[in-house]
Image (tube, rainbow, N blue to C red; front, side, top):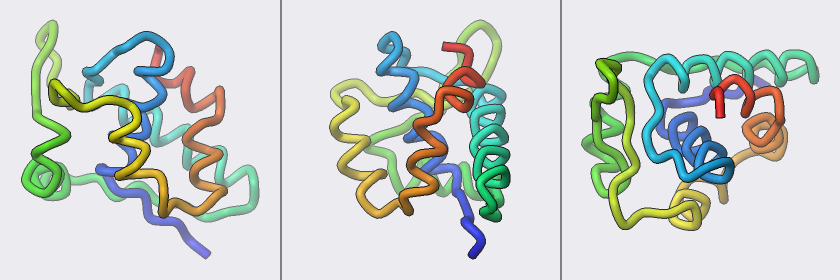
Length: 119
């Protein structure tokens, strides 16, 4: 089986883990991509195939389809994804974790992938 990990799952899970560590509601695209690369590496090491599905079109669709959760923002000259005010970890977990395969969920929660976020 091959897991296809989209920007919506990647961003949501990165924000969940970042918020657990310190209430960080903004992540740069580079931080999210580093997190995703580590998630894919963990899955590969566990014998699973995984691919990140990242593109400008997918990111634009994220902001259209999940506008109640995310908005594009910029901090210190770096663009990224901001969790909207009023949304919390529980909202992200409810929307983005219930359907994930266990292997993918565990990779999202792995300490190595979390460290890739720099939190």
